Image 1 (cartoon, rainbow, N blue to C red):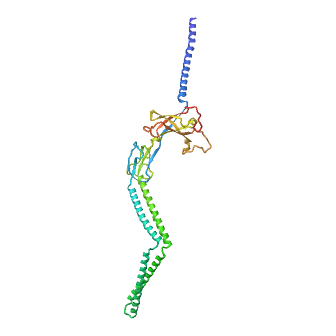
Image 2 (image 1 turned 180 degrees about the vertical axis):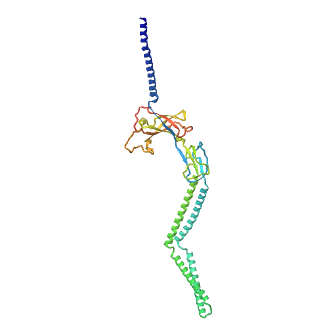
Image 3 (image 1 turned 180 degrees about the horizontal axis):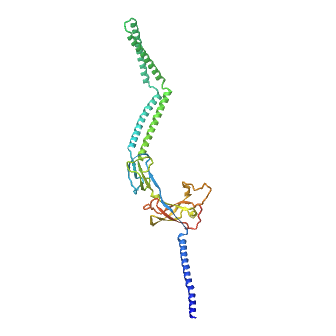
Length: 375
């Protein structure tokens, strides 16, 4: 009987020991579940997370306004530049020659204008009394010459008829007679024109010449200004305090207008560009606090604020359209970009393109958020 009683006590002890282990396992699971819930409640609740994010910033390509040969490049990769500092210079020899040529054109046009103005003034006021007197004297002289030539011709004709002189002398007298007649006619016409004054067409021509030379002066001055501006543009300066991220060419290289020589980064524009699932967009608003982890520097954690929420999905800018043309449809969650402004200046160690992770705190107040992302 003792053996039977011993067996029955052993059988009753085993279930008690198994129940204790089950209770222990359930208790451990409850602790783990509570820890997971506490971690979610205190650390994950109210957080929108994305690892599709990177450091972004404005990169400016410094290029010449005209083609030519690079004379000097004053910076290298990694150098810091100040606003107004000369980054590189183009060869100025041809530009100086163009400036001198334009200045010479201004002087020539100015002299032409002075001559045209004098002729216009003369046309307006008409001939002077002294000019009329000179023309009168020239006509009287031409009359005397014509009278003398007529007398010589008559004398020569008589001598020729008497066969005293040869025909050649008669021909010479005839030629002198005709020449003096034409000279007299020209002198008479000149005197008549001077007495009548300047004709209307001459006045119009004189005024047109003045306008033309004045326009030539303005065009030459514009060429001088253009040559001066081009000469100033030969020295390309930094538009902001920045950092040289790329040097494309060295001195002596021949480049075209608009071809980048140096690329600068503007540290003041550094920010985070992130992409969020559209399902989480209704939780995010401009001004939400953001925690930022940089993959390149795991020990560095940055903070920022949501600055912008873009109004187009990334698929809208894809080269391949997302809309199907075969009639089939598969719903795909879209991603929308946001811009996060950094609270501190990270330009000492961050560069555009670095990968980061963002955690957006979306429950820091109880105000509802509209679909437009504003409270």
